[in-house]
Amino acid sequence: MDDLGNLAERLARNSYLVDEAQPHIQVDQEAVRRTGAGPLLVRICPAHVYSQGVDGRIEVAWAGCLECGTCLAVAPEGTLTWHYPRGGFGVGYRYG
Ligand code: SF4
Image (cartoon, rainbow, N blue to C red; front, side):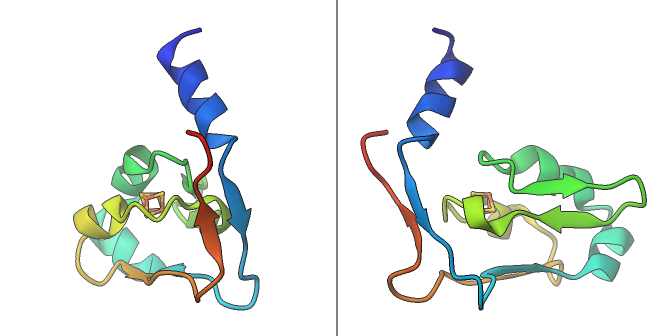
């Protein structure tokens, strides 16, 4: 199996308890548009949480977030609001 296959298999072993009431990542669409950060967010996330529509809007599939913090570290200031999920919610690492 190739490396990507192994990665997908390992990610599938994680568990996620999604806090539907409080998304832990929010995007300021105007700031993303102004800074051109969309492609960076799409490219940098190992869990493919971000996608960009043809209209340039960034969609956030935050339920699959690995809480690695990479997007927060590289995103231009003001583009993201990010915090850890409330206690008991979020990713649980298994065997990967
Ligand atoms: S914290 Fe990591 S996994 Fe979560 S959205 Fe940011 S880059 Fe992706």
